[in-house]
Amino acid sequence: MKASFADRLAAEVRARRAVLRLTQHDLAQLAGVSERFVRFVEQGKQSVQLDSLLALLDTLGLELQLGTRRTAPSAAVVPGSEEARP
Image (cartoon, rainbow, N blue to C red; front, side):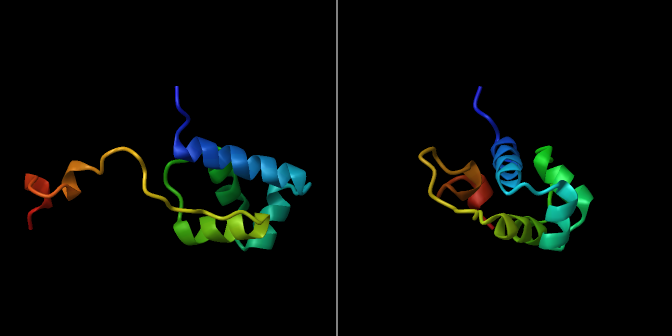
């Protein structure tokens, strides 16, 4: 089964924090976020604040990149679908 984005993100953050030998508390202080937020990211919580996530990733020397996926876009943006019309 393919890991979700949140799960992959959680694993990357945990691994990078371990390499840098930071505690969750240390990382939270350095990134200017709460320790609870760090825990949520590392647990793969589905809902996190983007600005806080970006601060956390920046502190760890990680970046979030976007790319065009190889699968079709959602029906809401496919021309001619009912959902795409205003």
